[in-house]
Image (cartoon, rainbow, N blue to C red; front, side, top):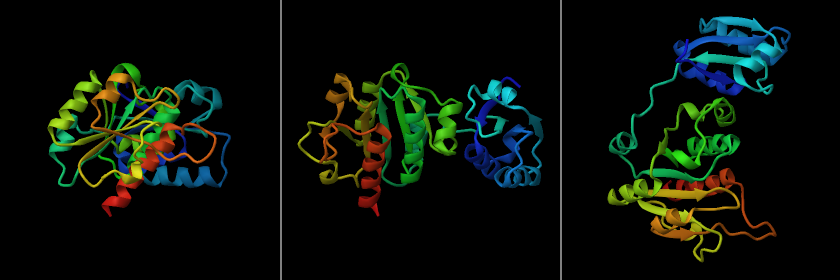
Length: 244
């Protein structure tokens, strides 16, 4: 089934079993693993009426491209997501909260950012097509189900997209270590897009110039920057705190 995608790991596959079992083509499981966690998982899958296939480690690795599959690999049909960023924004009845990632190319970082975005209730994650990673099986595993719930849009021109958000009266806030104003002093109750760059390199120059303002995350130790998923969590949860 060429249109099927791969999910692997207990958490990512269990989330799909809970939310959309009818979209699962089949689940390949390690025939040699029958510990309590696997038995509970198999019982859930059988209850959902999903086709189970016993496999060995080599076949599981070939399916998902990694040995870190925990003995569970599912072939699934993609779930329908919002077709466009405009669809998401037009459908909101609350102030938009968006996460923009500029230059995040590591799938583990993206997966962790999606997980944080889901937890904080962000409405979408946006990234440029030419400086980002797409949602692959590794991203889905790290995201622990959030890759299924958080709309992720890869745009051709990030600066233009940010300009279009500003036309919608969404305040675009970039993060930069040298910014004098702290993220904790910014007003995040308004419609806002939080823009974060990759660890070390930060925001690209054009992205930085397109932002309405720059804020920093206070750093009290010797390290100069945080992992982008940690920084995303700090910023998004500060927005959530302000909006409570």
